[in-house]
Amino acid sequence: MYCRKAKLRLPLKSILEEYKCGKARLLSMLEDSEDPIVKTVQPTIKTGRKWKVVEAVDEAKKCLKIKEVIGQTQTDRKGLGSSTAKWWSKAEGKEKRDMVINEIRLNEDSRRVEKAVQQPQQGQWTNWDNALQKSLTWNEIWHMAPLRISFLIRSVYDLLPSNANLVRWGKKEDPTMPRQAEHRACLELLQNLTGAIHMEA
Image (cartoon, rainbow, N blue to C red; front, side):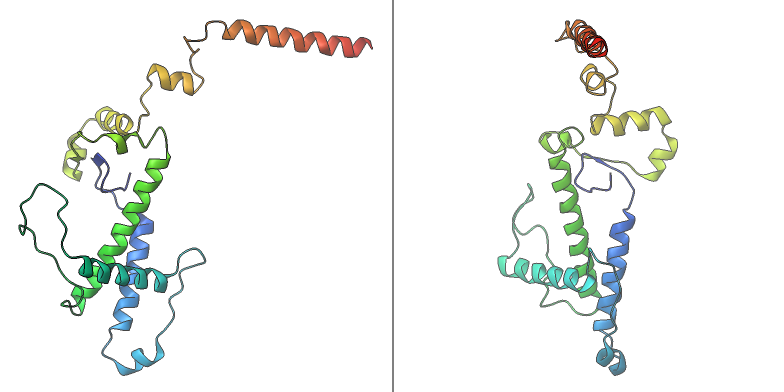
């Protein structure tokens, strides 16, 4: 739901992403500090076991340097040279910090897309090549009926009560297997018979 590349873009921010960006911003500010005492001490920033801020910032810096080596690539229908790129070697101070934080956000977003691709039901939107992305603002959400918001979200993530989903959730019998109920009754009968035979023996 926090993915910026999803077909339905909601104005929600991931708490985990904001936490990571905040820690990366703090580390970058301490590293680029003009105070000589702060530079010599280099305080450690605690983040936990699974994610290390130093590794994430180093990885983001490496990605930015590699992007500069590769150069500006064309990804959409805009003409060549229509967009400008910021390069790592020419940036300074706050601009470098912003580039690192933006790169961390892009990495988090690509992880969300990877996770969505692995989900067969909720990640169906990753296969919609011709569908346009719809971005919702808070103003639109406040003026929208709750059922319409629910329909929009559930339709993108394939959670509407369609026949296939009702069968998958066990709320409805599968029409392709009309003998499923008979088969279940037969199994229960056989289990009862075997239980009765064991009791007599």
